Amino acid sequence: MTTPHAESPPTSPSLPGFWQKHGARLAALAFWLIVVGGYYLYARQNDLTLQDSIIQISNGLTGSLFGPLLYILLYAVRPLIFFPATILTVLGGFLFGPIGILYTIIGSNSSAMVAYTVGRYFGQGVLEGNDDAGRVQQYTRRMRENSFETVLIMRLVFLPYDLVNYAAGFLKINWKAFLLATAIGSVPGTISFVLLGTSFGTLEDLLNGQIKLNPAALLLSVGLIGASLVLSRYLKKRETAEA
Figure (tube, rainbow, N blue to C red):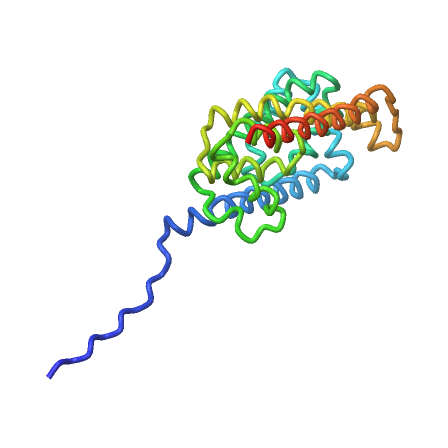
């Protein structure tokens, strides 16, 4: 007489698998809890308003030799804390003026490689269930077969910056082609958004309600965005014709 085998208990997800899937989100949540909690305590102890705090941070970044390095570092780790690239790019114009273009280009390319690495090693499922990823998924096969031109076009049409980074890492495309295409393709957008920030004066002026519009910088910003879209359309047509 045989005895029935006892049912094995359901297996729980392994810890490495859990961290691989949710580690980045949990780390970002912990970071923001620390930042928000630290800001609340600091502002309460020093009786600071939100505007006072922003001005202090601005003065700390622009009034020190290490300010630009801190800005670049913050930009580089930005994907890990899910802070929008566009906002930080425009802030580069507010804080540093035209020289912010150089700082932002260095920071944005560094952040692209950080997000690419996260996507390559921890990005399983990043694109799943994301409505914004539909257009990116159309490029999946082309990213593998023609990495450089596809990433270049995606940069020039201003697809979501981090989504492209994560997708490139997730698909394990060649990192050299990805970095080169990013370095070239992001230049028009970076310059245009930094100039957009520069065109409205300083951050302190804006907080005080004193908008000092620079028409030349604003027009150049809009022109670069238009030129980027035209160039992407040309490259896409050329790629289609060669296929």
